[in-house]
Length: 143
Image (cartoon, rainbow, N blue to C red; front, side):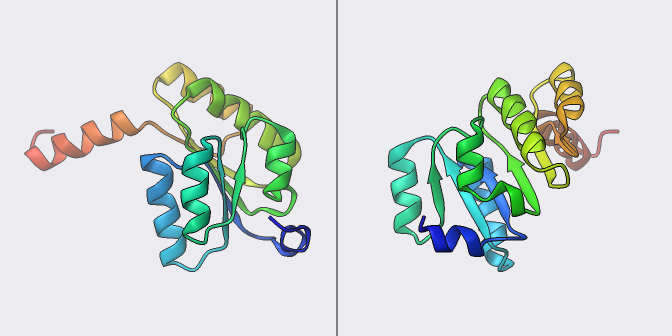
């Protein structure tokens, strides 16, 4: 990412982790013409995303320098959707420390972590397995 590009970036979204959930978020952001930066640790995946024309910061979203490389200071929202609960927690803590007003949404795999993520500064925590289970039960017509 060029320095001038970084300075011009504001009021954007940051997507930490571009697995299945992260890729869907990226698709929706793109469909809605919302500026975003992807932070991806996997270098090969990052290369593919860059080849598609996306802004990508290669690195670990738990590190301040990486979040700063994605212009966390001027971001409007951060989606922390890595496949590792501990990394999600540290990324939320770091993002909140660097930008007190950014909206942070993340995922959790259990109730204990959900509580910890909220305490760490996440504004919205979703539990994908729980949400999927509820939706399936609803579709089955079972209360």
